[in-house]
Length: 558
Ligand SMILES: Cc1cc2nc3c(=O)[nH]c(=O)nc-3n(C[C@H](O)[C@H](O)[C@H](O)COP(=O)(O)O)c2cc1C
Ligand code: SF4
Ligand code: FES
Image 1 (cartoon, protein in one colour):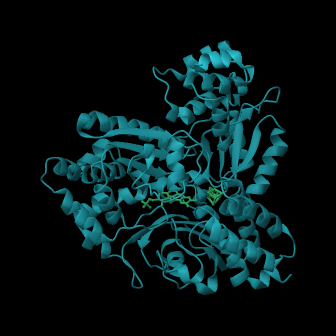
Image 2 (cartoon, rainbow, N blue to C red):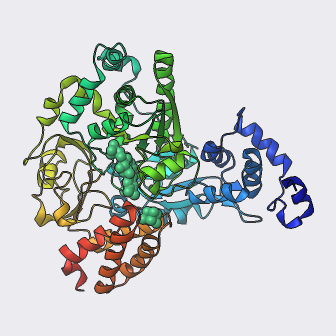
């Protein structure tokens, strides 16, 4: 019996779920304005609905499932996975039209974010939704709030209220080096020379290998080695660029994109040429609205300049999920699915995006390609301190006078970084502790201020540098509080795929809020989480907790 007759006969097998509201479906068709619906664009479509309605109700989910010819459950599961979609069921109350997000991660927290959220709630009394969110990548201006898409640096009741009253919902676009200015300063010469075979791919690759540039997304895998692995994979090969930048304390990618985006684009094109890439996907975190806007514009400029000389490039928008920075979760998200990490092997270099071999890179790794190829590996390795080589872009925030992205020699110590680059400690603040690698990299006491900051150098202290996000705490802060805030963050962001992380982060969050810590139980939890979680989130989530127990026992004595 064919499937149609089977369905007619058997009521139980008929398509179940909500009926399509055709009025909503027609509206959606108009809203999406596409000639062909693509399953992998599901998240893009959900953004269109969320942006236009301020939420997504079930009728839209049903209509979208109908247009994409997939199940309603599939759309619902994806939509509810991402924090930036407000799913409204049945008669549920819709959220107020306007949302103000207040970052409550460590740097903003120590700068009064919780009080700010309370003040905003008291003032707006429900007319505006005040939502606490994890780090939005502007920690140098903490505390930070976002009025719809408009980030408010050094936020307070007055400047947030002003933006709300004036309906200033969009970000201002920073002044950056545009395409013409970039070209006037020698930009795209390298790429053109490669295309014309004046420079050989092998020369660029050798230079990259000799520079020992390591992946700047956190894992530190040598970039040249990765390119060589990819070159040997069957085509078509894809390039997926990670600008999720969700690690609390990290804002270097945004800084480079808001100042010199074409340097990154050129690195991306050079990588594509050397490795033989057929299509490029750029995954940008949703919080970076200004970057999205300037990148859309500059990518068009790039396409106009190079026409069919460059691979097809798609810019994709994240939707507020930290786990989508993990490379395989990002790939799932680009495919329009829930951002859950994949089990490995196979590695994404072999079976990645849409099942193809994929070169996956942090944006900043590609940003350095032009300089290394033009100035030589020896230029890059001429920097460095304390036996380490190269340069690092440190995102420095917290209790220092000059927070921001500081480009410094690899291997610099935190003391040197504070004194020489970050303007010293704030007046009235004594250096007490630091996160050497964002929320995941652990916490060290000020007494250990002479460790070279680089890949591998912190391992013996159960810490790591990751994306080089340095958060400085002072005598005004408590490490127990900072560690507890980071554990809540991991609980919030755990994708739930594996039990040690899902249950571990939740249990640890509760235990760390207690006035007296159950140290044996917390130690057990930390071991299980780091030994048996599937991905880096669960494996690293207990680092700050372990640091408190190991380096700050006096805070636990009370
Ligand atoms: C939980 C988690 C979050 C991550 N977030 C990011 C991120 O926001 N940006 C990024 O480039 N890499 C992030 N990574 C690292 C990526 O998985 C991957 O190693 C990196 O993008 C590879 O590029 P690279 O070799 O150029 O560093 C994250 C890893 C984990 C485990
Ligand atoms: S470790 Fe956490 S984030 Fe990673 S797959 Fe498991 S549940 Fe998801
Ligand atoms: S923007 Fe608030 S901690 Fe990063």
